[in-house]
Amino acid sequence: MTETPILTETDGHVGIVRLNRPKQLNALNLELMKQLVAALEAFDGDDDVHAIVLAGSARAFAAGADINDMANSSVVEQYKRNQFARWEKIKRISKPIVAAVSGFALGGGCELMMHCDVIICSETAKIGQPEINIGVMPGAGGTQRLTRAIGKAAAMDVILSGRFLTAAEALAYGLVSRVVPVEHFFDEAIKVAQTMAEKPPLALRMAKEAVLKAHEMSLSDGLEYERKLFYMLFATEDQKEGMQAFVEKRKPEFKGK
Ligand code: CO8
Figure 1 (cartoon, rainbow, N blue to C red):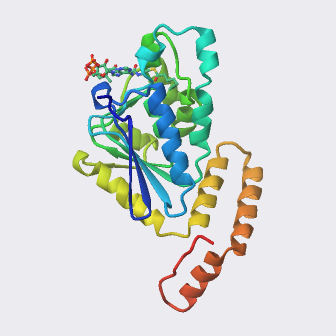
Figure 2 (cartoon, rainbow, N blue to C red):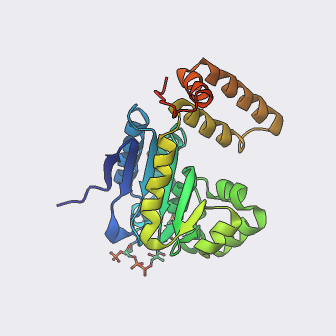
Figure 3 (cartoon, rainbow, N blue to C red):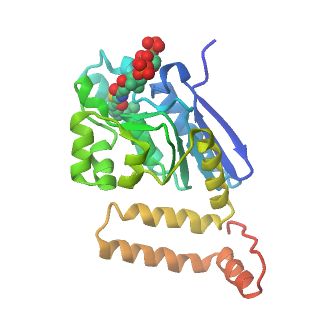
C-alpha cells in the first residue's frame, strides 16, 4: 500500500499539515508537493482554521526535493513541470504558518521552512542548502530568502559550502524563531499557533501580509502599505469588539468579521 505523503487534522482553530514520507526523510516529490499545496489552500479557505502548523517528523522536516525525481530530468522536462507555480501558491497562503522543524531541513526542505512565518526548531535541527554537493544550486528561493534572513556572508558560507547549520547557529542568525528540546518541538509549535488562533483573524492575516512586504518593498512603500491595512481594520467588527472589550475590561470575542 502506498503511504499518503500528507496528513491533515485540526486541533481547535489550528490546521495541522504533516509531511509523511518518513523512509525518504520527507523528500519533496511531486505528489507530496501537490497534496501539500492542496492541504494548505483548503485550510486557508476554511473559516474555522485561523492558523496552520506545518510539521515533519523528529528525524526530518524535509531533506530536500526528491533527488530520484530529478536525477534523470532534462531542462525541457523541468520547464514543463512548472513546479515553482506550486511554491508561489504556498507563498500566497494568507493565514500564519508555524513550522515545526526537527532533524534535517535541507535544500527544498529549508526553502519550505523559510516559506513559513514562525519557525519552531528542535535542538537537533540541521539546516542547510546542500544542492551544491549534487551539482546544482537552490531553486525554490534559497539564495534570496536565506540571504535576506541571515545576511550575505552567512548565506554564502552555507550555500557555497553545503554545510549544515545547527539549531543554535540558526537561532543566533535569526533564521528560526525559537529552539526547544526535541521532545517539545511539535507541542510548542501547536501552542504558538493556538495563541495566534485566538487573535482577530483578519488582523492576523493582514499583519502577516504587511510583514512579508518588508522583504519586497522599499521602507517608504512598506510603511504606506502598512498604514492602508491599519486603516482597513477599522472597517472590521473585530476592531470595535477588541477595543470595546479593552475599555470594558473584559475578554474580546472575535468573529473574523
Ligand atoms: N531525495 C530522495 N531521497 C532522499 C533524500 C532526497 N533529498 N534525502 C534522503 N533520502 C533518502 C535516502 O536516499 C535514503 O533512502 P534509502 O533508505 O532508500 O537508501 C533515506 O532517505 C535515508 O537517508 P540516508 O540513508 O542518506 O540517511 P543519513 O542519515 O545517512 O543521511 C542526509 C541523511 C544527510 C539528509 C542524506 O540523506 C542526504 O544528504 N540527503 C540529500 C540532501 C540533499 O541534497 N538535499 C537537497 C536536494 S536538492 C533540492 O532540494 C533542490 C530544491 C529545488 C526546488 C524544490 C523543488 C521541489
